[in-house]
Length: 192
Image (cartoon, rainbow, N blue to C red; front, side, top):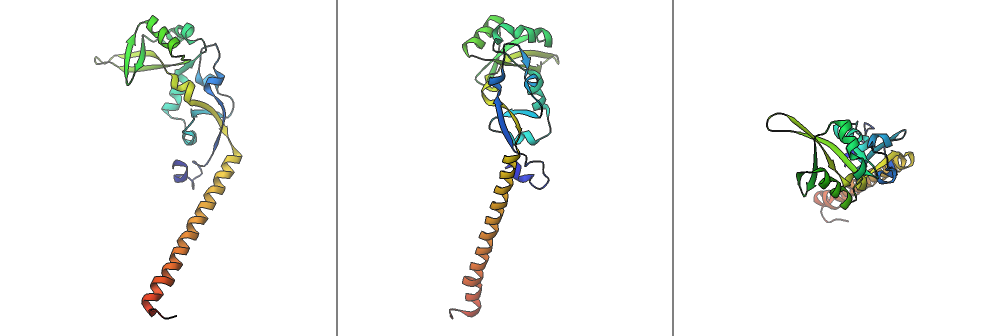
């Protein structure tokens, strides 16, 4: 576990409490996910809160700067297209991306009830860069806002101390058992 490996340097022990899901904060206005952050909050995937202890990396910046959400996404995505200078629309079909027309893009958003899209890019074979918009439902479903939790951090330390004590007692018991049942038996035989 990540937190355990960084227990002694203090970087991995901070525990986080879920404040609100991303879907609960999405409004009609189309804004980047970073605009929804409040003081001392971080955003992350619901099942990977240990990542919040890392320093912000490219992936975190991508989420806060390049993911845009709106409850009226199908009507407002062109605001992002013009502001970010994107050229194309893509939708994910299983593991592949498919370039689609604007009307197909709108239909995909409405049909799948999507409120977030990502501004993405890739390098083409001729060396040019293609920037595009792609709807991503996983952000509204799987991402939330978190704040530091002192009580969960204390509980984490208590669990760690108890588990270390339990392991030490178990090891000590095994050593005593081996000493009395094996070592002394080998030295003195079956004498009582």
